[in-house]
Length: 223
Image (spheres, rainbow, N blue to C red):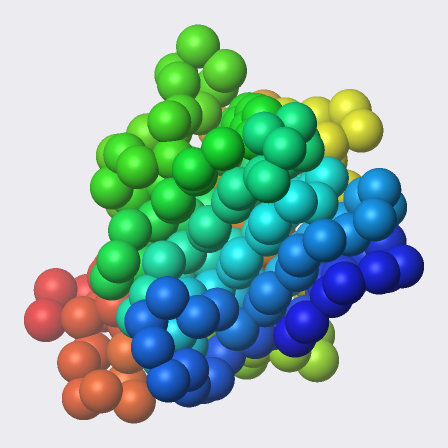
């Protein structure tokens, strides 16, 4: 996806997956030279592309509830020709990307209540971020809604109820399910990090791979 101008919202409630690039440095979603308009990428998943996932250059960008996982290139690339463009990331996941979860060369990036797997995004626990953390997501599948997503493991994922509230927390997730549930059953409601809000998944399993371990765990039966 290419954006030059005058787009403001680049991606919303979408999944980008399975794309191939001629070199690892290219990305499936590419935005550059935005002529002063703000890009918005919200409630979307970029996973398992044979390329980088998201490239933003010389654009002011707002990223909310995005999951960028398992891409062959970089997860997020951000830079600014004048070193003045801003990147505001909240409640988002960057993990398992082969050439680094983040590469930020210039500009003014801010992250809050976000997670990265390899500690390359410059996250800080002081901003309620989760640096160098495994998000523990289930595979890219149909977990409800019209697009494939990656559901947080309800028994162990650190992203559940760990997001920022207020204006950062979107009313709905990528599947158009309400946000702000008590996804980990600790008695406290909260907004989840990433594109999916853990809410109503009763059973999950890995039967497609021949492994019944998750079914056994959920049903309480020792395999």
